[in-house]
Amino acid sequence: MAEAADRQATYADLEAVPEHRVAEIIDGVLETHPRPRPRHASAAVRLGGELDLTFSRGRGGPGGWIFMIEPELHLGSQIVVPDLAGWRRSRMPTEPEGAYIEIAPDWVCEILSPSTTRLDRGPKRRIYAEAGISHLWLLDPAAGVLEGFALADGRWVLLATIERGETVALPPYDAVPFPFDDLFPFDDPAAPAQPET
Image (cartoon, rainbow, N blue to C red; front, side, top):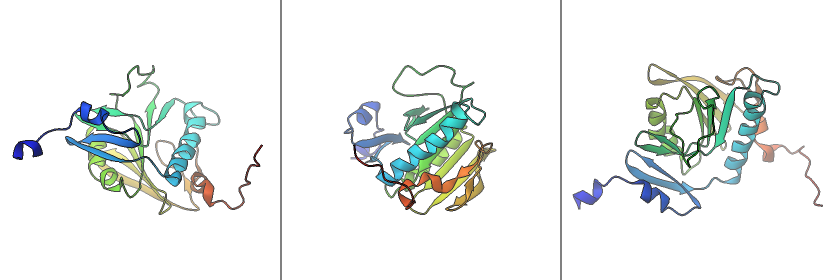
């Protein structure tokens, strides 16, 4: 029995997980959770859109970044899937050819949900620090809070906590601030519904 408990999860274990679940290997353990709920997914798309236009394409901002939603990262023996990740273009000048990426991003964002908070606030934070990722954002759509961290001497330092009604101006994307409330489209009663065609 002890031998089974010590078994490390393999990539074959990860590949066997049904497609409707997100799978990661964290500290040798296969971790799975459901795909994101609508609030989580729409916040990810909205945040990615805010950052992509100005920080990737350079429209009204500096450009120079590549963003991905739910990339599979192989950081040593750890296999993690952050909700969003960003690389300085100088560190990822060409598109990776495989299904996963071994270059640690410069920034990650985890969008917290009941099924992921334990991992996002726990071992994944440590894994990101060990990989030398310089910035981490933790977005909690249910609480309406965004925490921004910077890596300093191998430890996460909380830079700011943004709440509903405030403006997001967190490194490394502080050059072009945006309203935090823009990440929550279902909370805007003035947003017009599009008629069906």
